[in-house]
Length: 458
Image 1: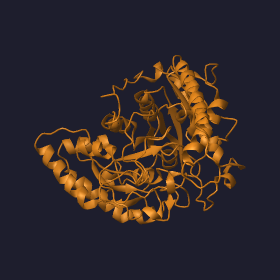
Image 2: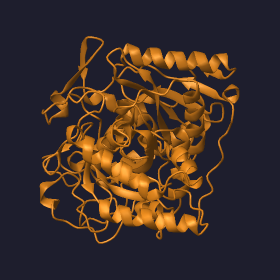
Image 3: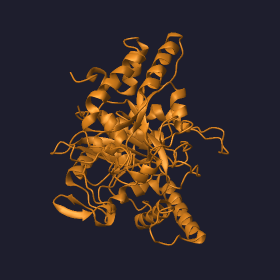
Image 4: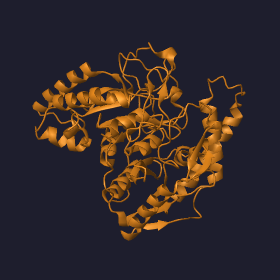
């Protein structure tokens, strides 16, 4: 067997069961994960910050707490976090050479919550510069490869995160998403990823060094895992206001339903703005047939669907404003009034979606229009292209799939749905109502039970 393979591909829940039964110790689980990273990561290059000695110390403490009868939701679970989160004593570079020697003085708030829940943080995983690509390569840490085909991207910007899960280096991950940065890597690496409802999870400690800004509009953080149930487990640990919030707690609604037959689902497998690989569309069609066979209400169209053209335009305008705020693009900044107009359009979309979700529980759509694409050195999205079903299509148009949930502050769960003929993972996303995070995760779990687990990268 390869290094630690008997433990590597357990879900966090499965590992916790073994830890609770005293079949192994947290230190043994930690050492197994470290050995696997040290043995196998050279060809993938995803765990780029390695906090192994502190992880071993935290694992020993987890064993001590368990021996004392303490019960914590992630006690002894080895995991990694995206490089863009502060990890005390280590650089937070966001892929920029100029920040190579920055050392965080404190853990990000989300990392603090994970540690308080007993998680053992092994280190951090790779990203593209400014978290602005569906690849994960930068001048500080180099290129991260897809575990299923090292000539291809693992996705971005949480690409190192998804690759670490697919390789069995970590049992949980913490990512972030504004343009599909959780969902696309999850899709490319065959794992689960959850883009949370806007404002649900704390962003403190997830910003460029020296820039403790207010969280940007649209951007969220969220968990990644090898099972939907682990997403829910992590969400319960992470959710809640920070010190600057007017709320003192958040009560997330329970899933709307617990059986497939009760769900009301709209399936969207095509869009005029972006192509979709026929294998992805076919896999989504199979999911739709499965739902229908179980008695769910499955629709292919609805007059209640919000204005998709307004959604796409508003998202592009807001994203461009956010991502070019400090960039020397040569384009003038927009006026405050123009920004307020964008926020007004966003609110109209949020109201439309709220009305839509009176009659539906979820939308199923592609997470991305193709499986993992080959690495490219071309930095300009405007001149990049993708080949989908033999046709050349615009690269940046694939943002439309991320935009649907993001612009309206909605939760979305990326879910594996099989493998392509080329041996690459296929995926869909499940979009739900605002704060309906547990509904999208529940539907992801129910649909995944009927799907064979993807062969994990080894």
